[in-house]
Image (cartoon, rainbow, N blue to C red; front, top):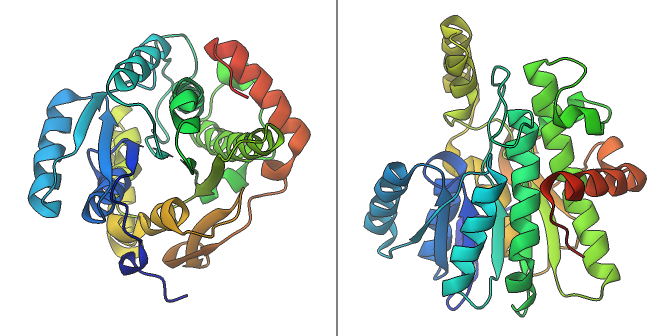
Length: 305
């Protein structure tokens, strides 16, 4: 595929929100959206890092993004962030659910959920639901949910995984959070179409990209050797964060992308130009997706469609 960021259409007049945009994939995604004319809000937990990222984005793109303080591991904070955004925006054309944590030691969110599932899935579920009225005010709204090829390492997810009630293994929890991302993406697509909305729900994954994500989890757990090994491997094998953002940008901006599409890198889904790829069989299970939706609505006390 010959796609490049030069193929991104003019986005002037559109409004985009990117979670986790202070570094890595989110930063590169926000940068290209700004360069192509979109009004971009970067949503992240750390205000200082957000200010630094905003200054860097303005220097590179020549346009200033807005900043929204957002902690996906705090459901009350998610609600407050969505409310603040709604006070200054009448509509939202593009929501990119990008932020995430990976392979962390066992931690809980503010609301008592396992950190990875709570942040990567439940936080984005709640954010999307609370921003849905603004999305549906847009002419052609689109939600891009960022997953990982690691979703293929697990076969299912259960409500007990929300609180790691049956024990905790960090990579298993990460895989389940990424499976949840795709189940949510596809169920959002089904519900949006069934309700007769113009909402487009699509997914993407970066392959193996150089970001802080590979080392931050081991470092949080104090496992410096694992962090060093992963950091060394990432430098050798991984593609750049800019290239890792290509699938998200493709999914977010390609005019004729089909509902429920999933985009990843072309070379064995590890690196390269973006192309359409296939979620695992578990991710395509509509009954599991319905159950996950019900559990998620119950956990977050918010629902959509």
